Length: 249
Image (cartoon, rainbow, N blue to C red; front, side, top):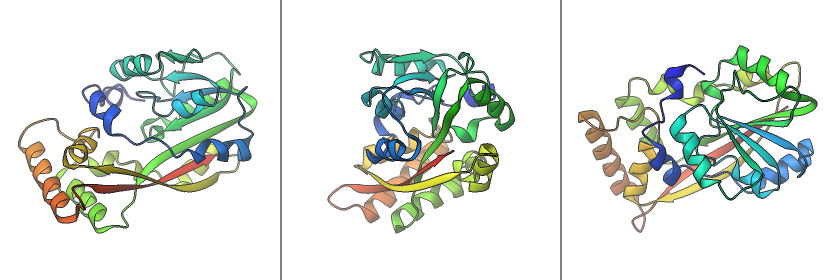
């Protein structure tokens, strides 16, 4: 992960904590059935951010290494997860986790793989993963099936020059299959949803690395977002729908 990417979320931690979605509860049972997830498995959560992705495994009883290069995000996860004795925060990257050789049963990454240097990360994952281990990559991918979310997508693509460059949708199934090779890629897709009032919707956008924090563009984005909300809200709330895509090998 390049240093400029590492620092992208430094000034968004509060919004990230409040407005980013969790993962569907079914994720754990799927991993139990598909890759034999059990309490004894040691997890490396790569790009663990504020700890959202670590929580399901911690509640399952797993020991989790939360590997996060961004200082502010790492400090947030350390505070949020302070009551979990089975959590250890690690200052590292996907390319240099600092974890011991063959120490990990499951490498997990939620919402982060698109930031990785794929070649260096694959080498590092091979080093830390036990021979019988698995890799799991997950995204909460915004649905564009509703008029509201099509409009939301249009606001981003029309106004933010770098949006298409940093959008995780640039990662295609074949990219993940190549990363997993020679192992076979598997995928399951789950429904996920948040409900926001107007301020929550604005916070959800502010949590994204490509959203400006202030200035003319920020004001224009917030105004267009408000117009969308007014047009499609129901009882002063809007549904923000995701497809949670779980890939594993």
